[in-house]
Every structure is written in structure tokens, then in C-alpha cells.
Image (tube, rainbow, N blue to C red; front, side, top):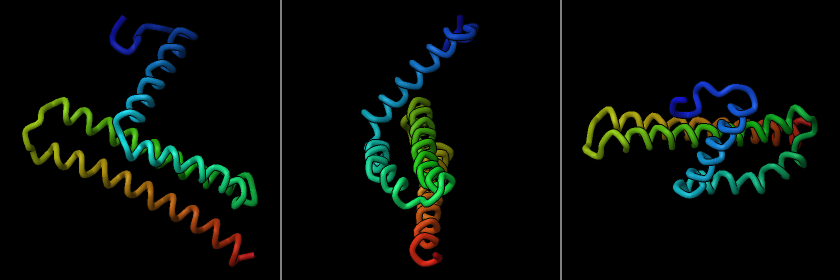
Length: 127
């Protein structure tokens, strides 16, 4: 079997994939302050979404926009890890890769602000 459990099927593949995912979450928790902050923000945002959202769709939009931020942060961390693995010398492409990942995190944050702002306006100003 190759790296990552290639060749596994069924429950064995699912079991190993889940273990790798858990290891990824743990690595992000241990090594990325931004991920910890965004994850802990969910402690506030998920209950707030249940209160602010008037429909299941609104609640899903609010929680989903937060999850997008987490997903993009994980992907950004993966990009940074690969770039750092390649080498520590300064390279314009390495810097660009990291900057693009950072921009993606910012864009996902703006999406979350837009979603939360839209639902809040509808709730409090729109009727």
C-alpha cells in the first residue's frame, strides 16, 4: 500500500482517512494560532447563528460561512507547510503562494462578514 492508504477500500479506507483528517485538525490546532482563534470563534458564532437565523437556510448560511473560513485556513496552512518544506530561501513564487493563501483567508472572512451582515440586516431592519 502506498502513502495515505492507497489501495484500501470500504471501511478501512474511511477509518484511515478519518485518522489522517484528525491528525490534520490536531496539527492546525497546535501550530496555527489563527486556526485556534477561528475555531474558538465558533463557540460564539454557532449559538449566535441559531438565535439570529430565522430559518434553517439562514442558520446554515451563517454556520457555513464560518466553516468556509476554517476550511480556507486549513488549506492556507497546507500551502504554507508545503512551501516551507521545499526550502527556506526567499523565492518570489514561494512568497506569492503564501500571499495567495492569505488572500483566500481574507476573502473567506469577507464572505462571512457579508453573510452575517445580510442576515442581521434582514432580521433587524428588513422585517
